[in-house]
Image (cartoon, rainbow, N blue to C red):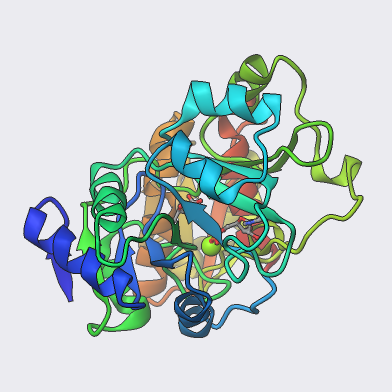
Length: 329
Ligand code: TXA
Ligand code: MG
C-alpha cells in the first residue's frame, strides 16, 4: 500500500507499524529503504527474510540526527565527527565501532555498525515520529528496498513491484540523488571509502583532512558488504560498458540487428535501437535517473543494454561503480 509520506497521518501510521515490529518502506534522498526497528532483532530478521539477503550481511541503521548515532556507536572517531559535521543529514553512511548490545542483528553480528542520517523530509519525519512512538524506535535498520542483488528502487512504484501491495510504502516522490549513499569506514585507523556515492572523493577528503583509502588497501578484517559484491545492482538484461567509439562501431556492425539492443550513451550515436536513451552530461543528473533507466529497459523486455563508459573523473565515481557492478553480473 502506497501512502503519501508528506501527510502526518501516513507518517504516524508507518511509525506505529514499525513500533509494533513490522516493516515499512520509505523514501530517502538516495533510494527507498526497507525499514524495521533496529532495536528489535526479530523485526530486523523480517528484513533479511523479505529481501532474501543472507543474515550476515550488515544493514545501515538510520538515525534522526548526530545525537542518535551515539546510541548505536561505542565511540565517534575524530574523522567520523568531521564527516558528520560536514555531510549530515545527507547521503553518507559511516561505519563506526558498535555499542555493545545495540543493533546486533542489523550489524549482522559485526562489532561495527553502519549509521546514516538521511536528509529527505519523509525519512526525517518518519525517524522523528518513531522516536516518539510507543514503544519508541530510535533507529531504523534499512537496506535498499529491493530483493537481494537487484537494482535499488528510486520510486514507490519500484518498491511495490519488488514486494507487492501488502507492504506499506511511504511515498516521497522520485528520490533526488538516485544511487545509494557513499560509505566511509571509520574503524580501520584510516578512512576507507567502501562504496562511492554522489559526494565526491575530493569533497570527502577535504572534510576528512586526509586521503580516503581503497578497500583493497585495507583488507584487514574486511566485512561482508553486499553493496561491495562484484555483481550487485544488476538488471535482468545483460549490461555491457564500452567507450563511445566502440559503441558506435558495434552498432554499425550490427546494423538493423541492433534495433532490439538498449543503448544508454552521452555521445550522439547513429543507431536504429528502439531503446536509445541519452545519458546526461553531468554525473548528478545521471545518478538521479540511472536505476529508473535500467528498470525501464527491463520492463521493455530488452536482453542487452549497451552503456557508454562514463568519464574517469571524481564526480562520476559513484555512477561508474554501479555500472561496473551491473556489467559484472
Ligand atoms: O543510500 C543508502 O545507503 C540506502 C538508503 C536506504 O539509506 N541504503 C542502502 O543499504 O544502500 P544496503 O543495505 O542496500 O547497503 C548497505 C551497505 C551494504 O554494502 C552493507 O554491507 C554495508 O552497507 N554495511 C552496513 N553495515 C556495515 C558494517 N558494519 N560494515 C561494513 N559494511 C556495512
Ligand atoms: Mg542494496
